[in-house]
Length: 399
Image 1: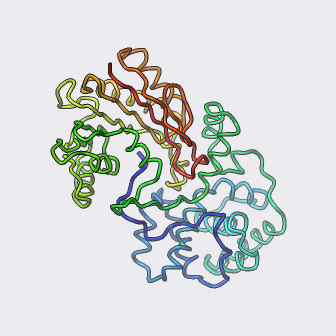
Image 2: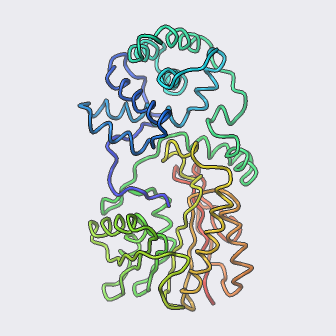
Image 3: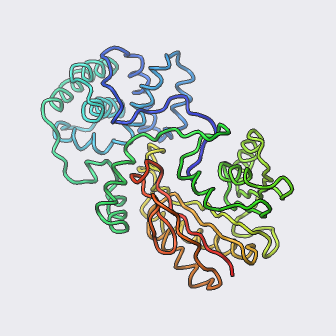
């Protein structure tokens, strides 16, 4: 579920490895970044929704738009690390603008490596007059002394439960490497048809191995990236890919995307746990299931602060119902492909175990090649393995 946009974003954050220190000028860019950060913090706005809307209202150069995007997404991702570093110097409650300004300054100092004189003076210049002295003093003290991290969750800027959960499910080395990679802005990947889609999602569509005349079903299809990719492999005489989506708005989004791409996809609005389709109808069924999304945290800057610790188990219940229904419509000799853009055991190996117990007629297909790694009967792709989203794929054939 990681191909969530069919158009190139207006400004892509630079990764820490490629970002260069910002010049001391460009106060307008920092002022816009501060405004957006306050709305995310104080109003609960979603970063990926509020930032484009604000940028569309401002007359900024392309360079400044990219800089604002870097500041907003980066500061939002690294919020806990910034707060932890600032904690020794903050001795009273802060209002949202002051807290956002300190995080903005800390992000420039600690993550972007902006020279202290530029980071401090340029940030102080865009805060309200009444708090400039406080912000100036705290940021100068932070610049003079490197932070001492309390723990890995603070250093990497994640809620405790995410670090603990992935460490338990993946092992410490893979968990920390995955979390570190998801603090780096993603690379924009564009398919030959112009659709923007992460490589991991492209590889999932390839893993379905659509044949020329297969009947293909995409159960949770929005926004249509995988369905359109699979449709490209069909013979012209074959039926179109059937793409189902529960919510009408998301079904309309899918229909618009596949129409724009010229893909042979028929979109229907239907509940994937109760498909209005006959038994044994499809030779290929893809269930790209709703999940906790812990493999796509680099792509959604504020998701780590919104996902709750109960979501993996809660969503696993839905995933089990989806795959059970998918088995019903799978034809003899057909292949079921289950995928999620998360890394938890409950949503990966747990679903494999459910299918093994409830559907013994399903046998495993060959595992996917490197950089995928075996994970139960399926395959796991970690974010640091190939600079992609984290993804799990399980391929089972019906005898």
